[in-house]
Each structure stands twice: as structure tokens, then as C-alpha cells.
Image 1 (cartoon, protein in one colour):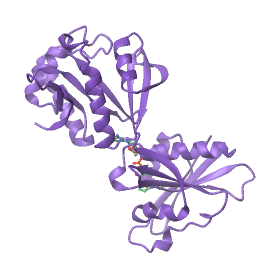
Image 2 (tube, helix red, strand yellow):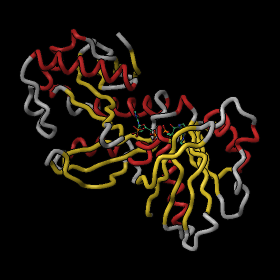
Image 3 (spheres, protein in one colour):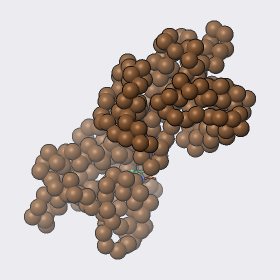
Image 4 (tube, protein in one colour):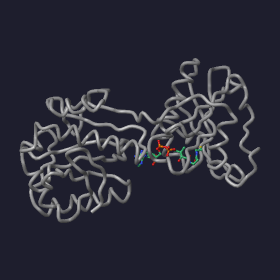
Amino acid sequence: MKYITETERIYLREFNTEDARHIFELHKDEDVVRFTGDKIKTLKEAGHEITQLSGSYKKYGFGRWAVIRKRDESFLGWCGLTYYPDLARVEVGFRFNKKFWGQGFATEATKSVISYGFSSIKLSKIYAHAHKLNTSSQKVMEKCGFTKIKEFEYNDVPVYLYVKKNPDLLIEFISAQETFQVRHPVLRPGRPLETCVFEGDDLKSTFHLGAFYNKNLVGVVTMMKSAEKTENVFQLRGMAVLDDYRKKGIGEELVCHAEEEVRKKGGTSVWMNARQVALNFYMKLGYEKFGEKFNIPKIGAHYKMKKQL
Ligand SMILES: CC(C)(COP(=O)(O)OP(=O)(O)OC[C@H]1O[C@@H](n2cnc3c(N)ncnc32)[C@H](O)[C@@H]1OP(=O)(O)O)[C@@H](O)C(=O)NCCC(=O)NCCS
């Protein structure tokens, strides 16, 4: 049994195959799945659910976890994190047995999952959605400090989308010199420090942003105004996140902040020479490839990409 986290009244642990019966009992209750529709009809389906969860634990380091009451080891329900690759976001969710409703367990479990997601997994932000008629769930989101950002249709159902940002992650302006702390190990490993210097780094129109996790610099990006262009076009350069902090949405935060800053400066578009390995990352952020693939010596295959702001 892998233990995850605890609060005063409960602890959370990974599910194992013996929990199929708990999942089955929980998800066959029409009232529990009224707003989510994820009814489970057989014990076999519940077993399949647990196999999928084990995959998520292995792949992402998180998933839905069993919520157990400390006092008597009762299975209360589940609470946890799910990564949605198509949407590129992590959401918190929960289901609790009806007999444990109205006792604050959903809020207590959700708060502990958020805190685990931010401090142990280092996620940049966590999303959640709740059916428009599910006022109890909406209250939990509010008590946990989520901000409602939009209303949309999820599987043909009207829902509110919420987000909460990791308070330990800050995006700040930094100097060209400071970017080297991340540019060097990520973009120029094993090469002299001077190779981290880009022409135009110190121009007044250039700016550098750093992502600080618990005050440590873990990611950087640079925006340079393209001199030869008459319009307000910026080049994105030196995009890098330290290995241990990748796939947590920190890269996305950096690009979004940088674009916001470009907009404030009257910029209308951003382009870059993108490494082939980072194409998906930029495409999810709305960038499009143009031109032919080309090679940069000692670095590898690249494409030009651009985005109209
Ligand atoms: C490219 C790079 C900057 C991205 O930084 P990052 O912080 O990992 O970026 P994000 O977490 O926002 O997104 C990265 C991927 O993780 C996914 N992701 C985001 N949150 C996730 C999570 N919690 N769990 C799993 N995957 C997640 C994103 O969807 C994205 O997927 P994709 O690559 O398949 O498109 C980083 O990988 C890096 O420094 N690479 C080496 C240097 C480099 O190639 N720089 C670009 C030069 S052009």
C-alpha cells in the first residue's frame, strides 16, 4: 500500500486490486454519479478502473486515491488528480459514499490533494470542473480557493471550469546573466558557459523571464524584438526548464507570461526556431510550423514556428 498524505481525520492511499469492491459500491450509486455519469455496473469494470489507475500512478506519479477515515479505517470514497493529455491539464476530482456526505470530507480531502499536488508533484496549477447544478461541488471548489474561469460543455453537460495556481511558483523578470543557470545545463550541457550568450541578450528591447519554484530558478525564456521587422514582432529564445521540473505546466506558464508581456509592449506576433522535440509543446500553445525542417549544428533538427497574438 502506498500512502500519499493525511489530515486530521483521514489519510489517502493508492488503490490496489482488493479495492474493486469499494469502487463498485461507490460508483453503482445513482446519487453519487448523478452529475458525473461515471456509473460502474459490474465488479469487473471496477477492477478495470483500478488497472487504469495503476497506469496513471506509474506514468504521472498521481491518480485517484482512496480516502480512508483514520478512526475506523472506513473507505469514504476517492479524491485525486487526473491528467487529461488532450487538454494538457491536471484536474482534481472526488466521489464520496452518500453516508459520509455533509461532514466536510470532500473539502478536507481536496485541500490535502491540492497541497500534495503543489508541494510534492510541483504542478504549476490544478484545474477542476463541476456540473452547473452541482452546488455542493461548487462550494467545495470555493472553500478550497479555486477561481471560476469559464462555463463550457463537457461531454454535452454544462459545467464550470475552475483553476488554482501554485503559490510556490512565481514568474519574474531576470537578467540575461541569470538565465545561464538554466540555459547552460539544459540548452548547452558540457559546453563552455560563453555558448549561453545570445546576440541581443542585453538590448533594451529584450526581456528575460524566470520561473521560480520555492525561490529556486527552474525555468527561463527570452523574448527579443526582431530588429529588421517593421511590425512589432518578437523572437522567443532560450526556452528551458530544468529536468526535474518538466511536464508540470511550468513551460506553459513561462510562454503565457512572455506573450502577455509582448502584448503589453504592443507586440503582434511571436516566432522562434523550435527544436523538433519541442514541436508538440509549442503547438499546444497555439504555434504553427512554417518553412522546411533545418539543422542547427551541435543542437539538431529545428522548425520555424509562429503565433499571431
Ligand atoms: C520544452 C520545455 C521547455 C517544456 O517545458 P515544460 O515545463 O516541461 O512544459 P509543460 O509542462 O508546460 O509542457 C510539456 C509537456 O508536458 C505536458 N504536461 C503538462 N503538465 C503535465 C503533467 N502534469 N503531467 C504530464 N504531462 C504534463 C504538456 O502537455 C506537454 O506535452 P507535450 O510535450 O507532449 O506537448 C522543456 O521540456 C525543456 O526545457 N526541454 C529541453 C530544452 C528545449 O527543448 N527547449 C525548447 C527549445 S526550442
